[in-house]
Length: 184
Image (cartoon, rainbow, N blue to C red; front, side):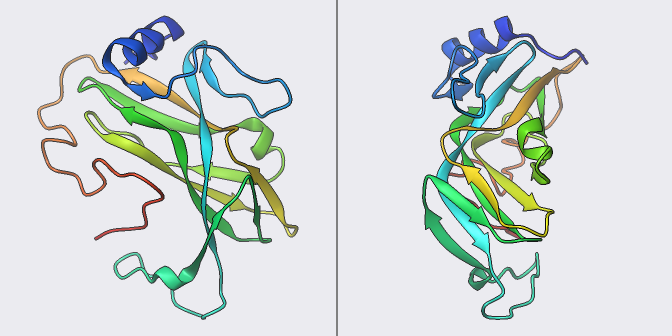
């Protein structure tokens, strides 16, 4: 299962709309870098955030998620409280080819500050804005910068086509836009 290079990512983004909007080079002047890299794509975080809060003392339940667990913020800089997290989304909209699996890794700039980015794999034929989780593992408030790099996506090409794609099974997160909370 080879990892796909910049030439392939660029071609798929331009010909098939795999990544929109697509940035055709690494942008880094005064920002956390984003855009196509040698073997991946560094996606940006949008300015939509849902920051975890304990104001209403609700229980976090993935089967019955209470939206009161979050406060919404549209901002250029999101402050995550100590030992807490925020949900956000990518600026980019992704359309994953049927023979590709995408793995996401956090940017080292955030990781070196104790901020961990978590995303589950993007399955074949999944499409949408990617919901990102930023965990602040530090005892201090942490900043996340909107419209700058947040994570890197690696595109893995399968040896053969899958029998059933995410679209085929009508996955519950198919076509998501905005920050998407857990669904059952």
